[in-house]
Length: 206
Image 1: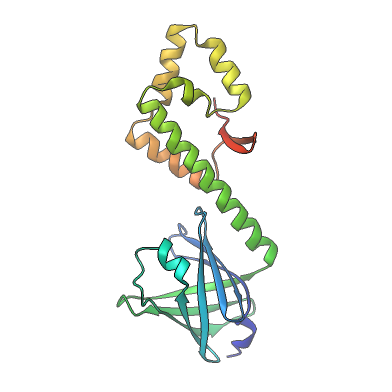
Image 2: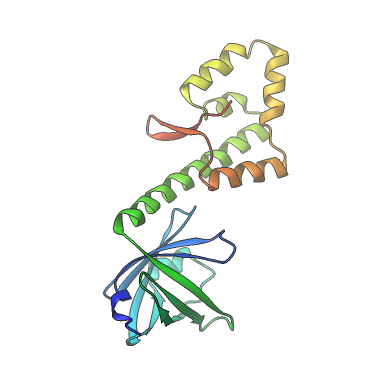
C-alpha cells in the first residue's frame, strides 16, 4: 500500500447509518475535524508511527470543549487499504475497547471550507430554534415574533388583531416535544427555511 498520498489532504468520512458525516483537513502534524451539523472544530495533533499508522491527540482546547474525552485521550488510526481516491481506516482508542472501520474519501479544500461554513450557519439556526421555543413556551409572543424574518413579522402583526387567527398561529407554533424534535432535526439537516437579516438568522416559514 502507498499510504503516503493520504498523509495530507482533505477527507470526508460517513458512518454506515449516514447520520454522522465528518470532514477532515490534515496537514503535517495537525488535523482539524468538523462534523456535519455542528459548529465546533476539533483539533488533534498527528504523530505518524509508520507509513500507514498514526495517532491523534486532542489539543488542550479540544479537551476543554469535548468533556467526554479523558485528559490522556489518544486515538490510534491504521490505514488498512488504499484505493484510487479513498482509504479504509481502523480506529481504536485508549479509552474504549471498541474499534471502527471507516472509509475516508478524498475531497478538495473548497468542499471542506463550504461544509465548515455551513456547519456554523446550521448551529446558529438551531440556536434560533431553541430561543424561539423558549419564547413560545413562556408565551412571550412579541419576542417570538421578532425571531421571524421582517416580512413574516409584518404579516403576523397585521393579523394579530384577529384573535381567532392569532390563537391558531400560537397553537401551531407552540411545538410539543415530538414536533419540536422533528423541526429541530429538519433544521439540522439543512432543510429549514431561514433568511439572514441584520447580521442574524431568522425563521422564514409560514
